[in-house]
Amino acid sequence: MIEPVEAEFARPPIYTNAQEAAFEDQGVELANSVSRISYAQQPTRQATEHTIASPEHEKDLKGRIIVDFDAGRKEDPRSWSKGRKWFVTLGCAALCLAVALGSAMPTGDLSGTAKDLRVSDEVIFLTIALFVLGFGVGPLFFAPLSEMIGRKWVYTISLTLYFLFTLPSALAKNVATMLAGRMIAGIVSSAPMTNVGGSIADIWAVEERGVPMAIFSCTLFMGPCLGPLFGGWIALKTHTWRNIYWVLFGFIGLVSLFTLVMPETFAPIILRRKAARLNKENNTDVYVSKHDVDLVPFSERLKTAMYRPFILMIMEPIILFMSFYLSFIYSLLYGLFFAFPIAFEQIRGWNIGMAGVSFVSIIIGIMIAMCVMPIQERLYKKHCEKAGKSVPEARLYMMMFGCIFMPISLFIFAFTSYPGMTWVGPCIAGVLFGFSMVVIYISANSYIVDSYSNFAASAVAAKTFMRSCIGASVPMWITICYKHLGFQYAGLMLACIGVVIGPIPYFFFFRGGAIRARSTRATSD
Image (cartoon, rainbow, N blue to C red; front, side):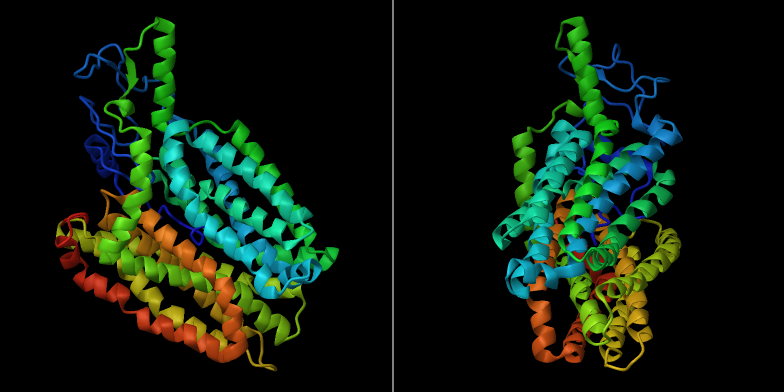
């Protein structure tokens, strides 16, 4: 799903223009890249666009001509027109929405699917678990692949395969076909979650990214909540679960057309192609993109992308505990896909369509959170100005606020779901959950990236892998808990876990600086 489903790229942007330029000049790994690129004799980038350099005059120590963007030709994606930028932004958001819906729409009628394929509910829950597990595996390959072939072709490959492997689910005559299709679809569909944040950063300057990133974040958070709503009504009105997959299949096909017409946004790929064109036109091999000077081989980058996240997860307490906290939040979201039908269908007798409408409460909470997140940025700025330096722990204000409302929402949901009680209580819980989920997720994600800015991509990958693995397990145990513990006491158990882990952001707010000071990988003050 995106974080939840992944707002991998925090809103507002984590780095200032000056920080991004400094990181690039030093070859530091940013959140949307897994390579460590060194640059030789490169001028500093301007505030809102890449440096304009003349290929005829810039040379490296080996005598190669450094290729950069030419002034006035709008080669740099950040110099494109606003219309072109918004075309790319909205198209990428649609890609994320298609993936997010794919993770949740089948929950609209899982019982009907199980009955038709003649398997137990627990087996059919694997259709969700395997898809989510794919989210943790796919980014390990798609992130470095985008550096080799560009974001456009990664999107094209990803959406085409996602489109094709959704078809087996719609046509499945047995559960084996269904599960194989869902697993592969989850893996191949993960590219937008990995790359869209980077695409937005490619085309928008830091001070311009607020609204584009808000739109991106909304698709990631709201997509999974819209899935049960759409899936439930489709199954109710058409009387078959297969139409859920057919509608999803059609929507994926529609948005995948965007990948055929979207322009490439990744500057290193654009400049690499420009250098290749100049070499061909001049029958030489002296032209080289500024991003390819001393470029680490792809095999090394892939190896680094595969093992470094696990090293960070094991060795760094901040990444370990923050990843666990976010994994719990992610698990709760997927748990509600199964809890809401129990609370509204089984306990209150609603049909599957109206049960899907109950997810609107979470969407309302998400929208409220998006409106109040700018408060976090003001608190962060004030804290850093007072300290006279950038302080990663200042990212945790809203998380400390949200971690109070998270268990409260779970308590309310559990103990307002008795037969005969009004539907208002669980929906209020949904609003509080949606609000706390977003403020916790964005704050924690920002804190991880700020704390490990030199290894941001690997830190985020570690979190994503843990989150997907734990989230994928939820369908396998959540209904068992509700069945054997009872709906109220299973909810009480989850709320108590939320209370127990609630002090984590407070601990890191006060002690995070000391922990980072003892680490050789964390950002130092």
